[in-house]
Image (cartoon, rainbow, N blue to C red):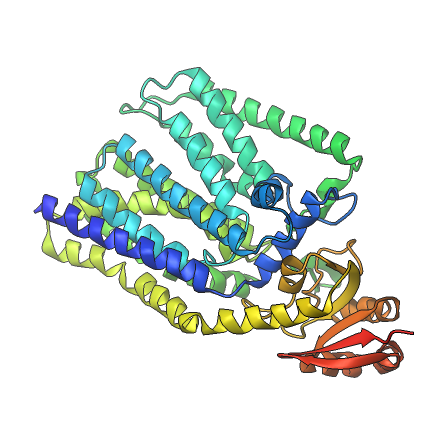
Length: 480
């Protein structure tokens, strides 16, 4: 029976890999793709993060994302970044499989949980280029060092160094440090607590992060570069008995986001835990707890900034917990049925994401709009782009990433192409007269007029001719 299940899940995994690759290249370039790839290309051109352009995260992720363009040049398509990120996601699957094998899971449980993992990440921004997969990859390598068979202190040190590199890719992954310490404290088949190795890991991580800070400071010449980190999404002022407090995210918003996150990875499978606890091996019991610690860490992060891509940090540990419960639940039919239902919601979301791609038609439309605009850009030129709406696959920053000759008028902001607030619009309106190209959607024009910037808009477009490009209106400065 187990052999048949292994073959079934193996075949299902291969199918999901094919669909995952297909979806990655069929999906239009996302807003995050446009922003991050544009920054990666600026880095290849020699501009320095924090000094020449604002980077709202630690720099190693952008350095890694820039690798294809260091080889192929900045004119290369954004599809190379898509392929690179897709490869990292699949590499993470391999690292996760190796980790599950190292904690003695059955092959059918490994392949079944890998199918679950692909379904989950597909619905959690995996089709959008971001730097979280790099951090997850390095974190999994760190965990693999921790779970080396002989558990020598040298391997703990290597694990700490790779975790430092994960933080250098995405600083928010530092919230997983308590989990990493828990993995070391309760490592092995006995109940012995490894205090010395946990302190060694913590010491190396703190020292490594300090050295990274100093190295980036020396490299960029910007001691305050860490102030650019995007920890908070939006601050709100609230009053409590006359005392003004800063509220980052409301409890209601956090709870809603956590329910969505829990639904994406079918966390309800934890209802099996009381029924299978006695049957779980020691690693199974520990990873059931580790999965909850990982979820709690990401939940805490959500109080500051609700980014569903942060869920990538916790998914590997949730998946391993599920694999152990899947294995233990196989003895009873009703528990086995509950375990298999976890595929339903992620599977539905997987299918929904594929349907949204419209068999590549949306990407073809996006590619055509980019091609038309590229035909008007013959030399390096500064531009103002205001999409009005900029969600998921709406065009905006993608113009900057796919047309390197097109430059944002202001690199001292971390929002170019993603401006939404009245302050953002006011700042852009003040720069519109300084550029030769202005690219606006109808909604963006309405927003400018409604925000009291009609004089700035009409002054900036008075000496420009208008050309329609898809959903955009392009205003080009007339030649004298």
